[in-house]
Length: 181
Image (tube, rainbow, N blue to C red; front, side, top):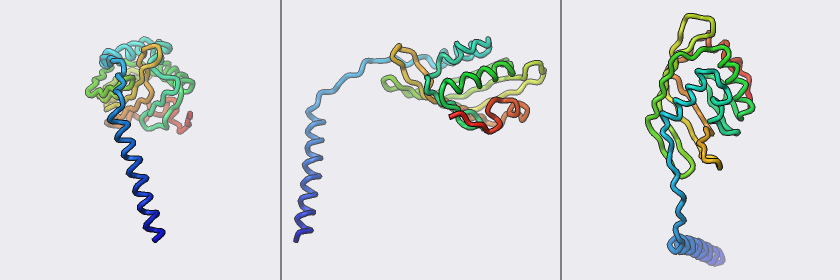
């Protein structure tokens, strides 16, 4: 008999809680978020690429959030701008970027967040070398609009179609398996 009372009491508590939730949701006023327009992602990435090609590290990393995480191909993730900046500086110093194509294909935007999916193709060579390598594949990026109104990359993952040539991997910062978390 006591088990029946406990079960009935439990069911009543759940029903009251659900009823209260339903009541509060139905009677609450909808709070409108301010409309925040998503950027033209192809223009966004084109500006970033132009900074990388010119070797302007400060401008290139200006799109990254302080707590950004980059998931680099075939390497451990790199967390935080303090760890990403030196790796990007070293990469810019040893490689020449010839051609880059980034095609944003799907953008999901809600409030101050957006997710961007697309494809990329990048032709690079090691500085002082004639041979060029084409890296291509897909990417996914999560961006957040900061208090100043700028869109900052929180997470970025490049998914190449094929592995880069071994000589690029051997000289790429972080390729030795070191981790920067």
